[in-house]
Image (cartoon, rainbow, N blue to C red):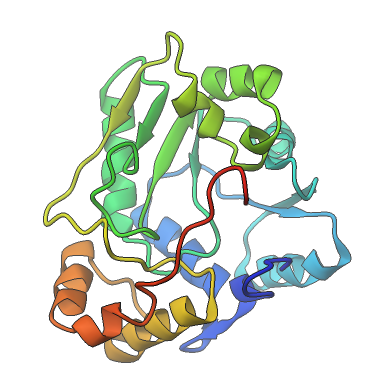
Length: 232
């Protein structure tokens, strides 16, 4: 709830469902994870996130505000696994098919430490999926400092060492498009998408085609710059 550019964004109502609810639904529809946990903070403002988790019937864990890597490691104590598929709660337009494909690749290629759609970005920002193995995440927890503790996986892909990394690419390429929710202008674009397609998950290619045919919609947030890792 403590977003600086758009406070309360994860609980904004989008066609009768919270932004967080859109993310949870996409993950559930993908049927790709064994356990789904919302990792929020101990801040009082995030009591509202816990209340929404209760309503959605999804487990939660509360941990540090800025040290999100520690928050993840703590969540893993109660929800153990061999790997973590990470989603950010400000991406309501996630495509369950992309989530499912990333999981299939990770399971199908033994020994992968990190799988991501953003190593060589082809998807619009806001549709990304990443999977990190437990050993790679534990190594990051031992060694990462500063902004790498905020971004959870950034140490893994910027300090790969002997880790095996794999990037997933999609066509048509649409890395110039932005469907993540950080600012009021992002909200305007996402609201237009939801107004067109309703309360449902939209396939990636359908979404990109619709946006390409409407440059005036793409321009709503084309000027928004993603914060650098060191800034966020």
